[in-house]
Every structure is written in C-alpha cells, then in structure tokens.
Length: 170
Image 1 (cartoon, rainbow, N blue to C red):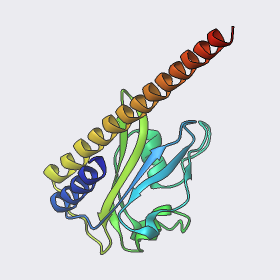
Image 2: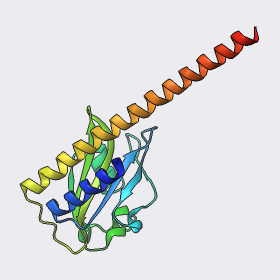
Image 3: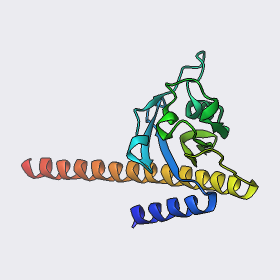
C-alpha cells in the first residue's frame, strides 16, 4: 500500500528530525508551478507557488530553493514578507526547504520544520532530509513514468481494438 508506506515514511521523518510540520510540493507538468501534494496540516495546503521566469527574482523561500536547486534553512521571525506561503505554519516557525531533484531536474520541494522556534538540525538530521528528498524525487519520477507507460499501453490497445472493428466491418 503506497499511501500507507508514504505516511510511515513521513512519521519516521518527523521522529528523526524532531519536525512538527511538513509540506511537499511537486512541480507541474509545464514546469511553472509548485503545487501542494501533501501537507501535515490543512492550513499548509496553500495556493500553488508560481515560479518566476529567468529574469525575475524568486518570490519566497520554497521558490528560491527550487530555482537554485539548493536546500535553504529559514526562520520566519526574520522574514518580513507577509506573502510568504510558509507563514501559514506560524510566525515563529523555523525549518529547512529541500528541493527534490532527479537527474539535475527539479521535481518539487519538501519543507520541514518546527512551529515554535529553533529547529536544531544536526548533520545527521540534515542528511536524513536530503536523502528523503532524493527518495521522493526518484519515486515521483518513477510514478510519472509508470503512468505514462500505462497511458501508452491503453492507447495502443484502443488502436488495436479499433483496427479489429474496422477489419470486421470490412
């Protein structure tokens, strides 16, 4: 059961990092938006984040991490931009946003943290989040390829059926 496995992984991530919230965003097919795929709390399921074009500045912590393909630690007590999507977590939240990257290409982002201030990630916890992000990126790409393969097979089978019907009619 993939959903159960995913929930168990999320619980393990919380235990290993002492996080109390997370948001997983996946990149849209057109590569322009990060859409919430999973969130630990309903208030974190915000509107999609539109990624800026190449000549525009990144708006927000998650967009910056996505565009730079680099993890970013944050403390919302230091972020004055009230439009920052992560403010939904709370004004004193701290955490880490890690891009999901596969083959050098952005797949999405995962943000984890604590609502009440300090989020003391040591090297081990930091590495756990990075490995978790790599696993999510790989699984997301695999799932997308699987869906594409199934779709291709369905279309091929429909074409075969149409040919058989046409042959019977002739």
